[in-house]
Length: 126
Image 1: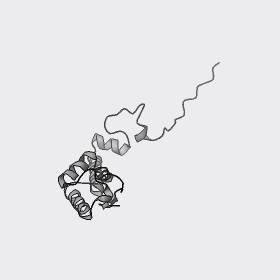
Image 2: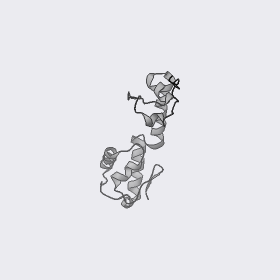
Image 3: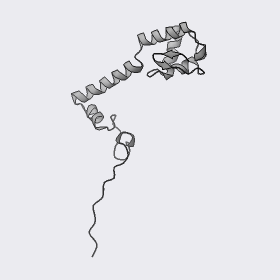
Image 4: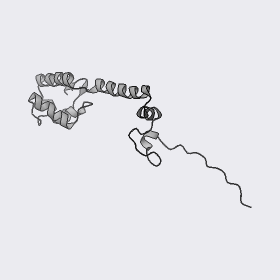
């Protein structure tokens, strides 16, 4: 099982699919990386030589923000928005949708399960 940047890649997957197990590497970027290094797309991850794995790891680490560095960068961006007090930062702070989605009828993913509020009791009719 090849290991790149602390992530175990699945043996039976093709190289371009196995690279997508890295956080921040999607299908298009995986194919571009393999193309830059001259590694075939259809080779299985278990068939990659140690030299190819080392080349992949060093190339990805040098040229792309992936895994921990990318997660850290995203968290810093969100905390910067919170610190400057902009609208997007306030939405992050309150746990509401950030990109303009409606919240009256949807947004259950961000808001969590419904919190039922008891309605007003009506006076008995005479």
